[in-house]
Image (tube, rainbow, N blue to C red; front, side):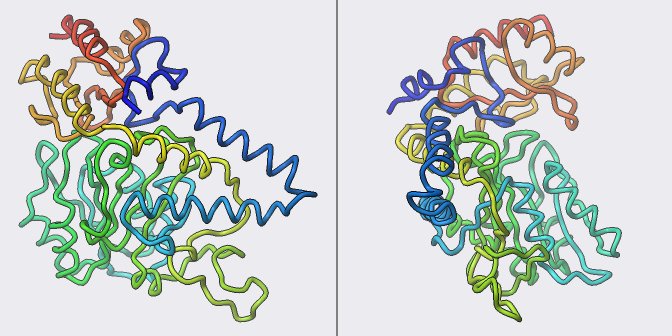
Amino acid sequence: MTPTELRADIPALQKGTYLNFGAHGPSPKYVVDAADEFVREHEYESPTGDHPYETAFRAFDRTRERVASFVGADADEIALTESTTAGINAVANAIDWQPGDVVVRTDLEHPAGILPWQRLERDGVEVRVVETEAGRVDLERFAEAVADASVVCFSAVTWTHGTRLPVAEMVDIAHDAGAIALVDAVQVPGQLPMDVREWGADAVAAAGHKWLLGLWGGGFLYVARDVAERLEPRTVGYRSVETPSADPYEYAAGARRFEVGSANPAPHVALREAIDAIDDVEIEGRVRRLAGRLADGVPADRLLSPSTPESGLVTIDVDDPAATVERLAADGIVLRDLPSPNAIRASVHAVNTENEIDRLLESLRSEW
């Protein structure tokens, strides 16, 4: 499948110029159809023809296996979650925190990587924030902050600048300090290669409703097998234990202990369908070419992302970001403003076109 063919299957892209994939990726028709078909089977046929729980569990198993192969993990290292936020919280809530324990994050994190740690501050956990510059982390400063930390949480691709952080190096620094390395990877799958083994992270949280073009609710969490055995989730249900009726219970082996109870499998059926579709499309090179075309057209003093883009996220300084986003939307161009930096961000996918990039640039000329 080519990017053009993929685009043709996405109804939302048939009108207007959509450049907000870093927030939400509109789904192809067959991804939505896969979810609809599953719901119909689950509700109309399985109650008498099979068994609703067995139908759901088979769907979960197939998606875990597909996600695992997509990110370079084993199926028992994948938990199916609602979102990246849910994955980060699952790990945060499975650690036996003590007053004085230290968590380290960067100042580039999305609220998903900020709020769970803010809550722990109420219990006496110290949260250190590593200050960055232009979307870059100084590794020496990072190492100093991590020296006595229990957990380190950072993004693989920053939502603020579209920069790619040196994940493997930062994970090594965390491990040298004896800390758990948790990576927010939501901006990676669907636009960049993702191999959790190469990263070496202990846990990686992501979701399929952005660049993968899946549905909301189709998140996933990778937890390395040996790390999972050391974590005890605070939220427990029949899917998170080996035998639900056992007393005392035992957590399920691997990452499945982070799954809880009855959840709608449809978003994860859609996630599997989305991965199958996008895995066959040449994405990374085209994203870079289109993002590069956009960056080349922005004055250097207005471009807050790298001049040679490292992802499809391109952040641009304008005088009034909220007003600019509103004006562009009225002209049929969809992107978003950011709280920090106070700017606008275009998220360029392989399904976009050169004409759309040129149209955005033409619409922005009045800002400069």
